Amino acid sequence: MNTQSTTLKLAAIYNILWGSFIIFFPFFVFDQLQMTRPIYPEIWQCVGMIVGVYGLGYWFASYDYKRHWPIVLVGFLGKIFGPIGFAQALYLKTLPLEFGIILVFNDFIWWIPFYKLLENTWKARSH
Image (cartoon, rainbow, N blue to C red):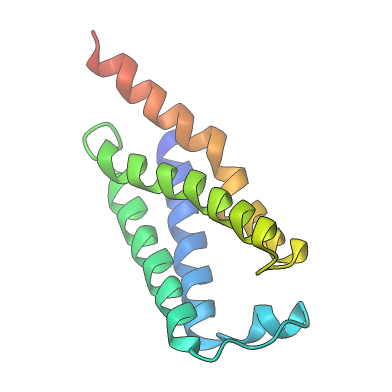
C-alpha cells in the first residue's frame, strides 16, 4: 500500500469513527467543554453523518485517488471552510475557543496530506 492510499484510508477510518461517535453521543463534546447542550442534537448528529459519509468517500478514493480526485478536493475544501466557519463563530462569540480542539484532528492535520494528494494529481494530469 502506498503513502497516498494509506493517508486516505486513515482519513476514512478517522472520519467514520468520529462521525459515528457524534451520532451516538451527540452531547459528549458539549458536556466535556461545559457548553450548553444544543436544543436540536439532530443537527449535530447530521454533522456526524456527513463526516462519516466523507469517510466512505475517502475509502473509495484510496484505491485510485488520481481518478477520484473530486472526492479528495471536496474533503480538502471542507477542511478549509470548517475552520473559516469556526473563526466566524469565535468572532461572533457563539462558540468558545476550546471548541477549536476539534479542528486540530478534523481539519488541520489533513491540510498538508490532502494538498499533496491534489498536487500529485494536478502534476500527473498536466503531463
